[in-house]
Image 1 (cartoon, rainbow, N blue to C red):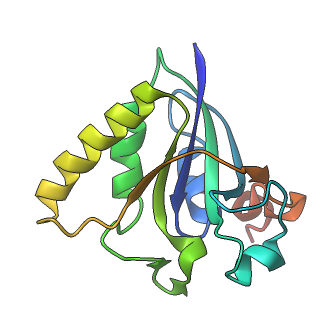
Image 2: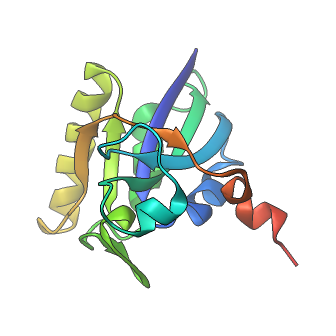
Length: 150
């Protein structure tokens, strides 16, 4: 069955590239989530006043990859102990955040975060929030690394 999840783990280009070929991932899209407005631009998000995070939105087949497996990959793809940054990118828009869409995702996200927090000696800075005000990023950001390989 097709499901979606939205994750913030720093600049959205690298996570999109890392997730796109994982078995069970049907589609990736980069965008902005968690802020106060339903439609924002890259420039506005970079200004730091919208409350949005740069995110990758994944459509996946839960018969091939579980939400928990996606979260396991999420924690391996970035440093969840950094607050409001992923070196060298600094700012609230680069925060570590799991945006849930269902109560089941919320419960599983909390379970995985608690497990990872034990591994990281209580230093995890990842937020868990209900998805709100998601909007797709501009076309030039979509598949950015793939389009700009030399």
